[in-house]
Length: 366
Image 1 (cartoon, rainbow, N blue to C red):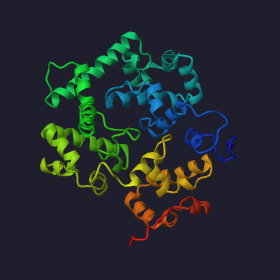
Image 2: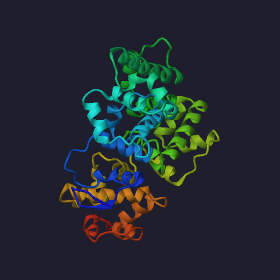
Image 3: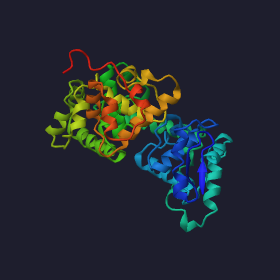
Image 4: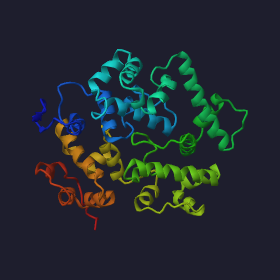
């Protein structure tokens, strides 16, 4: 049996659950007749077994309120149980309808109550104790604010701040600091809460997480940072960040951090290679194109949104490859040979030769 997309006429095999799963990302690659919802982004996260990368999806489905990596993993597990075609298989359209009607919590409980208790797993009992993540009441909002305050206080005191300072006073003092020092404080707050920056976060590039090839590597790097901040002072960390010596600090305290890509990103947090901005843009379903990416990687040649999305998909496919070398792509861009380089790795339509043109090589490039 062949299933065909009504929007773009792409065909695929449909009957089995795993094959139906292959259609989840397709809506982001074609022009669907309905608006893409945050539930579609959630379905994509469930399919890939990764946290959602879309900011609004994180807000709509509770990931912004799950304050630890453990809680976010359990929340993702809850949605996998609901949406995986091999389990309950509830479609994104239904999940979106539940959220819009304000009955998401009630319907999640009803869905799980329909299956035997012994098959509900551990995520549902956790959810029953943490429903405020999805239905924040006034009390829940207060509790969430208390958690946020606790995170701020924890980081402030860890970095040597006075224990008598209130959360409001701490926030006021941090906002008056130079930008680099603010960034380090906020990064400490994340690390001490067992978080690490996601691709949509502003710290994903400056602290080197863009150099990782998968979420597992990002978690590993976050763990190394968590060890580092227990060994160095905050001033040491801040000074190393400002002077691009974070890797030296890792080495000083005997923490493995010798990675080619990480070394490249961390050599100057104020002026990174545009390939890292390209990666951040390409792997997100949404996001703005920065000027350097538009110029260096051909988006300035796109005449319509469909061309932007098609070009973006090619780059996303590249970054998802196990043999992807971002620095080799950067070098190809400087030679003005992106099409040739990527064409040696994957089959490309001839139209991409026009789309991938850029102003390089410059006259003095050798």
